[in-house]
Image (cartoon, rainbow, N blue to C red; front, side, top):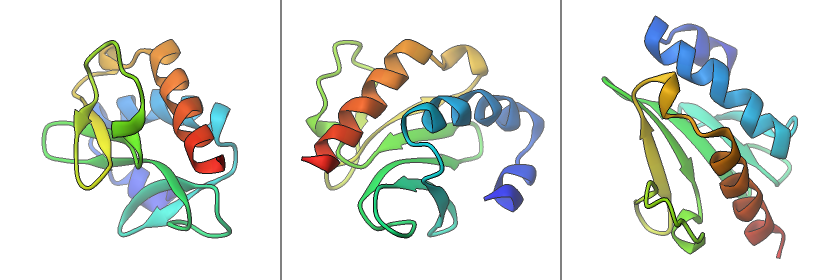
Length: 114
């Protein structure tokens, strides 16, 4: 995961530098590289019971939740993906809402534990 993160441009690094500690608050030590990008999973290896991910694109970093469509999102920021995923596009560190994102992470983790 370190190689992936260190290869990001400065703007995206600023986003991931703030985002990863939030993810690690809820899913400590559960991150790894899977399909070329960071994924946090409850299973014994990356991709086994995945909960959250981040992936850098040209102009943003996607912060996603595998079962994000099942999470109540009063903010309306989570965009549906396929098949059950949902993500938010982060273009600057100001797009990160720590309280909201931690609540999403806890909800996503709890869905996978159930």
